[in-house]
Every structure is written in C-alpha cells, then in structure tokens.
Image (cartoon, rainbow, N blue to C red; front, side, top):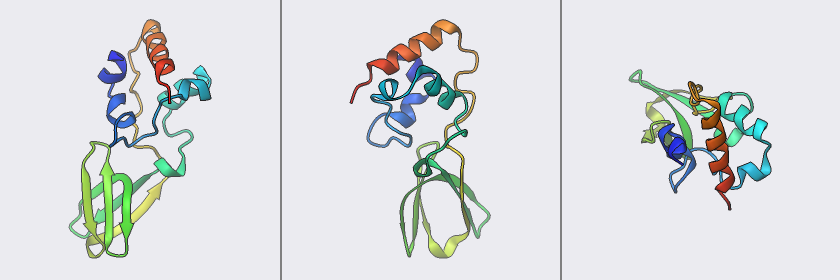
Length: 128
C-alpha cells in the first residue's frame, strides 16, 4: 500500500475523484504480466473512456485531460494534476482527442523485484 501511495497510483485510481479505472479486482481480471505491461506502457492500449483530450484556448493556453462534462456551451476537463477546468465554447480554439493515457510512463522506474512483488500483492488485496 505504501508503494501504491508513494508512486502516486492512489491519486488517480482510488476515491470518488479517480481519473483512471478503479483497480479493485484487477488482479483477478488480468494476469500479472498484463497488469505490469499496462503500468509500464500506459499508452499501449488505452480505452476510449480514458483517452486524453487536448484543448487549446484562443489565449494560447493548452490543457490535457479527461472530459468529465461537455455541452453546447463548453466543457469541463479534469487534468492529470486533478484540477477541474471549465472552458466556455467561445474560448476554445482547438480540441482533439488523443489515443494516449494521462498516466505518466516511468512510474515504476527504479523499483526492485521485491517492490514489484509487494505492489502486486497489494493489488491482489483490492476487491470489488
């Protein structure tokens, strides 16, 4: 659990404001190899639900995040730093969906084999 928290996984994969998928039960649904491939290579196979949207405003600001609400008037975007941004339609110059994840690569960089084992053991405790 400490690794899950220290490596930042908890920010996006637990709680009501989670940006990424809930990992409860993931160790039962996916093989160990598939789980770690998804962690090490987060852009390899991204569900459309978790693909990043890039928005550029007419003021030149660029935002990357997940659309949590969209209407004819604008959209609400949640960024990888857990900021919620409301953008009005008239201020959006460019909007594009990218087949990439907000999850940064390299989250497990420098982790040793016991660390991988501990993280997997923790993921196995997460049940629906």
